[in-house]
Image (spheres, rainbow, N blue to C red):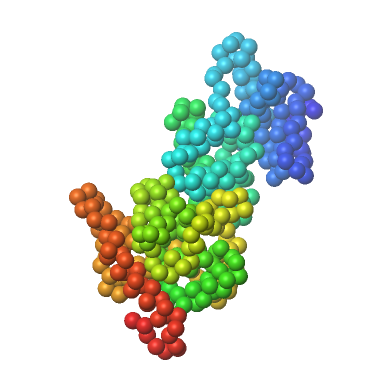
Length: 375
């Protein structure tokens, strides 16, 4: 078509994806129109149909875009074309390959899942990806947490590309979607703990793994992914311990806790992965599970990680030594640093006593009547 400012302004938005309009006056030059109505000047080159985005209309005028397109074509004819950046798919593969094995398996799987949001960029060169195109994808993600996590992975990938010198810079500051993460302080009351356990046991008896996991979280205070990834090989029934390997721990260090009597009753010997998903991988925590479980509890202003904070708080109120609590929860505020270098005690004996007291506390909590106090 013949490009004029009037004809470009009148180009309609496509019903799906994007549409490219070619200029009769300059070969390879065109205007790409997105579903949302954004218009960008592009230059399509080579047999692989590589596209260079020159600028967005009307910020960049037709005259300016044509001039820039001619400069690029002239440089290519003279053999002074700048080295082209790799495709997004190549950079993504290299980025993920460098992280596989260095992260917990669950974190790596989340990297892969969140980067799928940018699948449409696979055949786009990394230098040609524009902030607005990325923002359009982020804005299409409905869940705030998903948008935040996708943006975080994209930022890491771009910084990886800059480090590899595939690009010199990229305007990351133009992107929006970061979630403001306020520090949580929620601690469940005794009545709430009781309700959570009662609902968890109903779910467990009904055959839902989520109920078993929640029950184990209350009794052990561990992180949800540790329990979701729990394998038969981690459990030593002879010595009554559970040991997670470094790759499953946020700290990156092996973690051992005692196996309490109730927890032991929940873990049947002979199984492999205790809570596999349909792909025989560790349990997949989904927001649908969370919402349904909280609805059954009758109160929704809490998350699974609040159970961990609740266990730590109750243990302190019960007079359990802070170092023992830290060891049980794999924290290192007191037992880490210089102390952690020279103090090598496992605290297993102290943890066994604390777990025994905690299980008794819970059983008293479950059997108490209205108005009584177990403390």
